[in-house]
Amino acid sequence: MYDDPNVVLHCEKIDKIYPGTKALDQVSFDLLKAKVNVLIGENGAGKSTLMKMIAGIEQPSAGKMYMGGEEVYFKDTNAARARGIGIIHQELSLFPNLTVYQNIYMCHEQKSGLFLNDRKHVEGAEKILKRLEHEIPPDTLVGDLRVGQQQMVEIARNLIQDDLKVLIMDEPTSSLSAAEVKVLFKIMRELLEQGISIVYISHRLEEIMEIGDHVTILRDGKYVADADVKDITLSWIVENMVGKNTQYHRFERSIDLKSAEKILEINHLSLPKKGGGWLLDDVNMYLKKGEVLGIYGLLGAGRSEVFECLMGMHPECTGEFIFQGKKMNVKNIANQIKNGFALVPEDRQGQGLIQTLDICKNASIASMQNYRSGVFLNSAREGKAVDDQIRDLHIKVADKHLPILSLSGGNQQKVVIAKGLMTSPTVLLMDEPSRGIDIGAKTEVFEIIHEFSERGLSIIVVSSELKEIMAIADRIYVLSNGKLTGELEEAEITEDNLVRASYAGLGTGKSAS
Image (tube, rainbow, N blue to C red; front, side, top):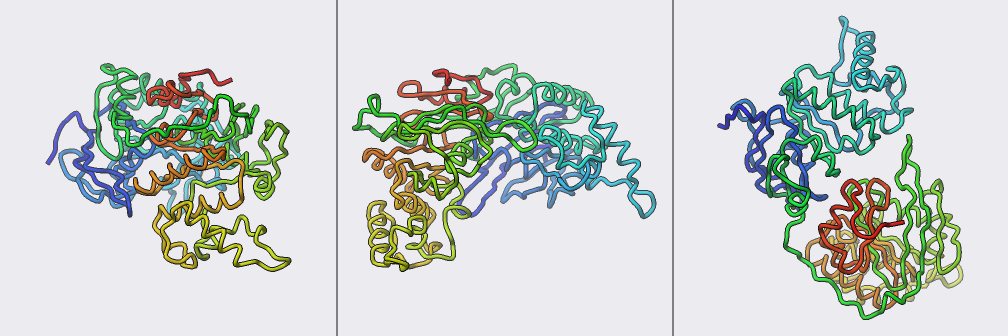
């Protein structure tokens, strides 16, 4: 039994276990009544997972939740909604082929006898959109709206709930303009006056300090600290978010990067966002021969989009690529492989491997043309090349003709890296190369990155893991909301500088022009 009149919902020692990972570990959390409860932490800290427990999207592996002095269990979102809990998702969950009013009243339909009362739906949608200062015609298809307008429709869906007690807002301002954020904050204050409690997840520190009442910090799936916003500083938040225990050591470089030539320049790279706005906004970067360049930023910062533009996956992007002193015409993936680029994608299973093929074919598939003899495949040459990679990368495999899924996650990731290296690249792009593998395999991947950079391979690594990017990168660019907000090297590469630059574009370190 848990009963505190100032707490609308209490989580007691919540665990959430997925295959291979513990997303939440004994997390206790008090949701204060009529307050903006800020939840903050690095990517993967467990923020969204905890909110999914409260909203009924996921169920805890262990632990209990209490509301109004009694234990509650939400088997699904309907059970959570019945207790007055709504959630605005980080990823929009709208139906683009339905109208604005149909989206707003989805699961809250009004009826006249056996039929839906669309007149009431339209009137209600007009009323709530006027309150949000977005008087969009209710019969407009959601797919025709820009992203910021869609976000307002997502917010409106939750505000029509009459018995709303708790509203969870997961990155609600990520697609909103400054004026729209101002309107949202006004609505939030009105909700507080009505006694509604808000959980607010944001990567923008200045928003947290402006709108938040109480902050709770998670790190690596565990509760770290909580405090009233009036009693804390930005430095307190950063220190508690990143902790003090660095797990990885920095590699000493034997090559002189200061005098190394620039091998790649990216000038004024911009990528439009569907529905308006920018995924990348006038980004300028360069890469030197033999350098390990890091790109750090939070979810949605534009990290992976830089790689996608470099590999020719976004013909709509604008900007200039200078490769080995010459302007490069980026056409498509096949052409970029010929130009000397290779990508190790973030999604190992979906984009990096073909699960119906064996280990050998997964490693050689991107460089298959190198092993042709006329119209036939020279299997002996192919096999030797794969054997070389297995040896160089220390891939633990009994037989290269076994199914790819017979390998551990770490060895699968090494096969994806081998696939890229077998194309003999000049530039290797690695998107979250250590995601989903254990600490031992991560260390081996870092050693591979160091070893090949020492041989002169130029590598760009995207990582959302703060300590990892600090350990492996010689220089780091920081992205925030599609903009370049920092360029850090040597002594400037600190946890504090990286976090400050990635949150809300506070831009510590060198200016990135």
